[in-house]
Image (cartoon, rainbow, N blue to C red; front, side, top):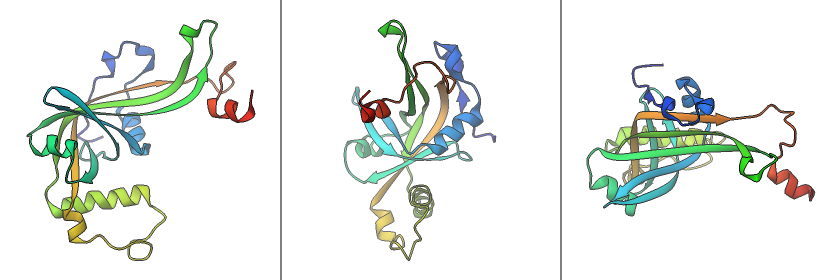
Amino acid sequence: MDERTPENVSDAIRYQGKAVDDDEEIAAFLDDQRSGVLGLVDDGEPHLVTQLFVYDETAGAIFFHGARDGRAHGIVADGEDVAACFTTSEMGRFIPADEPVNFTVEYTSVVAYGTVGLVSDPAAKRAVLERFMAKFAPHLTPGEDYEEMTEASIDRTAVYRLDVAEWSGKAGEKPPEYPGAYDLDAVGESGE
């Protein structure tokens, strides 16, 4: 990985048995995920926004986009080096135990900390928005399945860049044959 790799602070996780200390594993997980939650602070009050995102490993940054309006936009536009955090996770099977307090779930999660700002350069915004299209509509062709991005559409879109300074990862998984492990959706469908 290059020099833009964030500092891995997974060693601060309380339960070290689930800490992910492999930066490449964290980067790959971020690359695979589609949405997460961006956390900002607005005048001392937490503000959370669920976002689609793309991760750029070379830049060590997570990108979001949205309207050039609203609370999150105001927080970022009004600040400089705005502190932010971001998290994304994936849930697996539920794991029963003898005592309900010990029930658990398989999961993987990443939390990233850094500063967020607006991308203002039109060419840089276009490049990020094209990454979004490649990630979320890889089967569609610009100019055929949808219109090419115009300068006007790029201009009216806010593109956010979270420069990740630190991140941590956690993962908890049981073997496939783990006794009693179940997929809640499958249990609900089968009526068991």
